[in-house]
Amino acid sequence: MNTYSIKIALRGVSPMIWRRLRVRGNTSLADLHHIIQIAMSWDNDHLHCFHIYGEDYGIKYDGGMDFTHNARQVFLDDFGFDVGDRFTYTYDFTAYWLCDIRVEAMEPMSTPTPRCFGGSGRQSGDGSRYYKADETLALFDLIVKVVKAKKTTTVGKLRPLIEHYEDVRFSRALVNKQLKESFYS
Image (cartoon, rainbow, N blue to C red; front, side, top):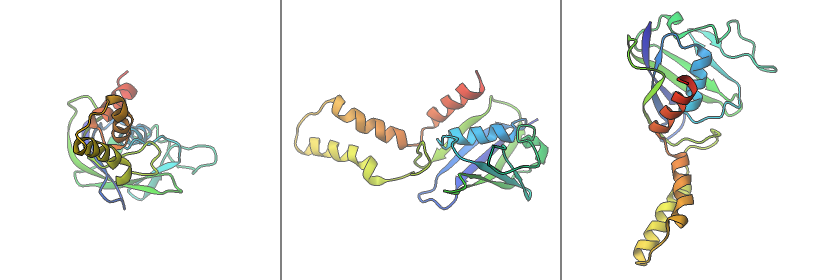
């Protein structure tokens, strides 16, 4: 069994939003969907599909697409991927979040997976926004005002702004914590 290092990049968004993940070859496409949901901080509220080697794969839901294969029974190793191979993942067919996925490396199974080992770009729980400078700059504006006025402020006044900033900033540690809770317990 292989361990795959994959890069997931959300197409058409600037600044670029991407994640690097390490996943086992015995990861089903249903589990990969769940891993991507965690890594991108999405809520699994919408339909999705993978497009691999000319065929669509996904989890069948009432009112959704019908797939030839059961995504819970199709595993990454089944595709015989090589380094450099690519496929796509589409989430939310209305908003059409299209992710390009590339196999960057393959190695014999080693460390526990799934695991996020890199990423960049804002994230949001509902996928509706990724980067709005005016939302995250409010914290910095308050700090600048306090410093310029040579005043003091309380943590209580800063806390809501810090929590909002942390909510949209990518956190590899948070992603790995959520992956651990979902896949190792």
